[in-house]
Amino acid sequence: MFQVRIHGRGGQGVVTAAEMLSIAAFLEGKHAQAFPSFGSERMGAPVVSYCRIDDKEIRAREPILAPDALIIQDPTLLQSVDVFQGLNPDGFILINSRRSFADLGIAEFVSKFPPHHVCDVGATELAVKHVGRPVPNAALLGGFAAISGQIHMESVEKAIGQKFPGNVGAANVAAAREAFELAQAA
Image (cartoon, rainbow, N blue to C red; front, side, top):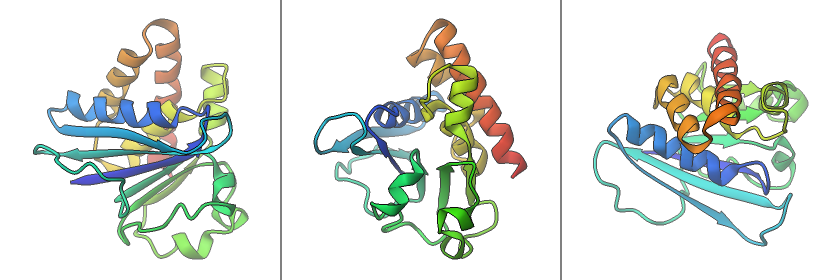
């Protein structure tokens, strides 16, 4: 089973990201499960969502304490929440940031991970460019597909299109596609 924990803030589409990731896995014939965890429901409050992907039925229902991958939608959480808690030593880290890992204060920590398992993508900027709103979730799913290999970019595109039909979906797909290309090149 591959387990993903997504950290962000209310209003960034953290819960929707986990839902779209699970849809992408379903489209590939896998079993998937997505669910959120949050305290006070308000814009800007820390939010965590989870997604499990497996080839067989998933019976676990508890929060993911030992993730195989982290998607961090808001880098300010690095200073206030232990987002790396329990992360598999061979895990994947995708951070929504254009700042260097040194500038984020995590260079030493991420240097312990295998090459190409840690990536930063300016997903908020991509969302503003393509969608016109600072919602990084879809773009980050493109980056996740590139670094993890757990899902294909085509499945991400279809999942986004199912969740957001029409022009909004097409714009989010464009953001995800650009993030995928950036993450592959990193």
